[in-house]
Each structure stands twice: as C-alpha cells, then as structure tokens.
Length: 448
Image 1: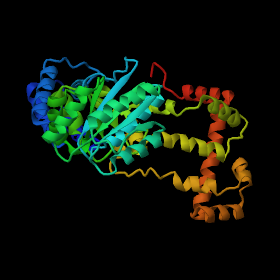
Image 2: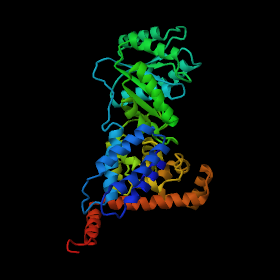
Image 3: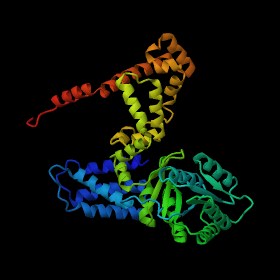
Image 4: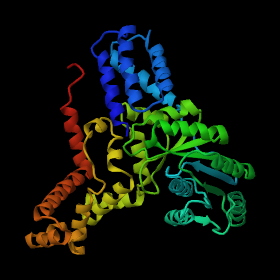
C-alpha cells in the first residue's frame, strides 16, 4: 500500500536536496509535486490543496540547522502534517460501559460481515470480552450463513432467526439474548446495498434508534478510493457514526481514502483490515502510517506483532537448546510458524525502514515457507531431532517426499547448519563478549 505515493513524495523532496535554505520558490516547486502525488493517490482535491498550503505555511520561515538539510526538514514537516491529517492520535473503541452494543454499517462488498467477525476476534483475544454477533441482514442470500461461518472461525456465538424479517426486532432480541447469556459486547451486522439508497438508510436509522448503541462503525473498502470518502459522508449525515474500519488496506490501493476520510468526515479511522485472516485487523495509528508513507518504516508495530506471537516459556527452552547445540528442525519449524502468524510477509518487511523502497516491484509470496515446511515434514522424527544424520540417501528421500530437487534439500540443510552455528555463538556469553570487544576495537575513536 502507498508504494506509488511514497515514491512520488521522495522525488518531490529531492527538489530541495543540496539547497542551503528553504525559500518560497523551492518550497512551492516541491509542494506542487506533493499535491500532484496526493491527487494521483486519489486524495480529495480540497484536502490535497489545504494540506499543501498548511505544509508551506509551516515550512516558510523555518531555520535550517547545520545538521539538517532543507529536504530533511521538509520531510519532518510533511510527516507531522500527514499524521495530523489522519487524526494525529489513535482512537480506540469506547468500551467503558459494562455492556457495549456496536452497530456495523456499510455498502455491500465492503467486507462488513467479515470484519464483524474480525472485530469480535479482536475484542475476544485483545480485550478479554465475550462478544455475540447478531445477524440483521435479512435480504442478502446466505448472509446469515456467512455470519455463522465467520463466528465459528473466531469461536464467537451468533444470534439469528431466518424466519424473522424485521431487522429492528432481530437487533432487540439479539441484545436480550446477549444479556441472558453473559455476553458483554453485541456486534450487530446490518444489511448492505450495492449503492446508497433511501430504504437502506431509513432501515439502519430505525435500528440505531431502537437500540442503545455505544459505537456505530462504518466499514468501507479502501480500494474504492474517493468514492469511499463520499459514501462515508452520506452515511455520517444520516447515522452520525463514531468511527471507520478501512478494509483491504493491504491490497493494491492508492491510499486516498485513508488520507482524506478524517478531514472530510471528521470521524476517526479506528481500525484497518490488513489481510484475509481473521486476526488481520489492526488499530489505526496515524503517526505510524505517516512514517510508512514517507518510507520510514514502522518498527513499533513490527515489535508489537512479534510480541503478540512470542511465547516466553518456549523462548527459554530454545535458548537452552541453542546453548547446548541442540537446536533442531522441530524448533526451526516452530519459528517459521510464529513468523507466519505475524501476518503478510511483504507488509511486515515494509515496516522495516528502507525495506519498502527496496522491495518495490518484488513479489513476496506468503507461501514462500511452504517448500521449507514440506521438506521438514518429509523428514523422520529422528532426522528432525538430529539433522547431522541426514546423509545422501536420506536427502533424496526427503526431496522426493516434498516434491523438490535434492539441491533444495542440500541448500536448506547447509543454511540450517550455518544458522545453528551463529545462534550458538550468539547464545554463548563469552563469544558474545569477544564479538562485542572486536566490534568496539574496530570502531573509529573519538579523535578520528
């Protein structure tokens, strides 16, 4: 996401490269390119125009320090302005009430039902809540069945009644069912339409009036660009919703909706959908997103994702095995599975500063680990526990069992052996001390 915008913005700032000061002329030239880049990213025209005017106002008159170039200062000003444009600070769900009702609204095809399930998973796993999903889409064929499938995937109960054709009555009965069964969050999945129409709007208004909602969330597909912002505006005029869930932000989207929606509708983006898995729902952090747009990465989010999938007890066991040179293919397989749980590989790599640009045009397949896993699964228990016994004939059998060439097995075993040596060295405190001393000795002194 945002790859083209990031590249265009970088080119815009190069106009100031090597210049000694920020002037009205060079800022105007640079920001003309910035405005074009924003418009190409499908950012609302008025938003792009206002944004560049604000950046220009902040930039002019800034003193350029000796240690900071005009280009670097411009990047900093733009980063702060982008974060402010998207809301500055993250806005989480209002879960202060003992019993919370959340109403989901959006157009058909925006991913509303799927993200209803994702939100339930988030509340269950991250907030220790006991949610109930309520099926109030009485029009779309198989909508109720889809919600039941989603609920089963995330381990959350679903209230439905296919004979009842009144969405208002269904919502009220769903809430009563939740209270009677110990649920403390109710998420109501409503009907979507292919376009905004009066009937749909009137119906969802009636549902909202009939129940005491704490949060009304508008689910919108980021790939619809500027149309997403226009639709959000129409929904907000009728529903006065509390926040936005922006879906498919991991896809081939230009990012205009993410950059425009807060300024146009004056409602925060609370969550973003970043993949197909049910745990692929992230809190929207404007500052972190601004960093990523400008190619600065997002190390904080990367660390948080790693921590979510980090098993401290398992790590202690691995450390002991590494120290004794007992790290094996079973341990390696567990590490691969932990990395896969963290999410889309290209998205993860993009969180590392500089990697987004380096990986532009490179297709990182989420199935990249599959051949490695297949080779490990083709090994016997004894081979996984003791990789040193894997001789030529065993390698041929592993290759045949996993559908790869013998060279691929040889490559895996060689890389694993080298990794194990490095891990053992890193795990040995004496070796680490020697390595650090060597690094320190090789560094230039203060007087150099």
